[in-house]
Length: 263
Image (cartoon, rainbow, N blue to C red; front, side, top):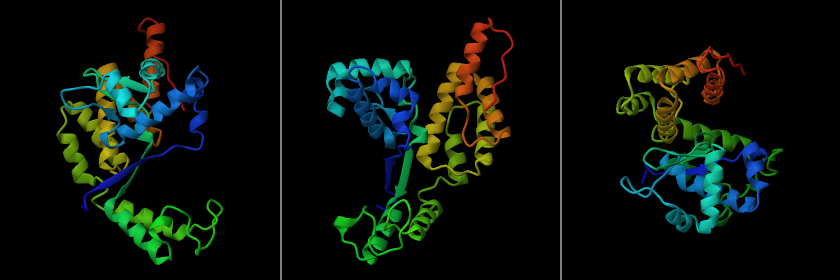
């Protein structure tokens, strides 16, 4: 039980202002597409962004429709739209991959969740009130009755809990178990050092999936270059979008010299 972990979807305040979301929502049946997309994201949370019935059986449209309780015609048309807008990707083995999931995963260990419940109970709340703003603590601008101090303490508990964080040795062990070449293993090790190994297990699994996909699509050198560039510019994440831009530029110029892109 102590190893159990809960995951949730983190939607930014401007989620519905994202260009792809705005485009989809403006389409006929667009609101149905968005609801379907959110259901897919939720289903993929504890699978590193991947959707698959089993190791040997991928989901087909009918299965996805049943899983998400969505009309089969909506599923068919929405999947085409999501694929064309790079919101999802269909991998070589027919696994559905949610491209934005790495940025949208939140997590809490069972231990931290129990501690949070204990603190809420001690503050005078019943189980039915858990999840609501406490009524007997100092107010904050975000939530009129939310204790900032308690949030900070809980956040520290989650980050310091070794069961919830990958830890340097665990992440390196996960990397060692992959089939990546020495070149990719070394650049990912460098990236982990740059990030000070601050990855949760599910987040790192998602990163490995993305790297594998990018290596297949763009080649090892391009992946190494973009990771090195992200480190040298002290960016928070890897600028994968630059691979797409450079690939298009290369095609337009007949494989000639690539242009430099900056933030």
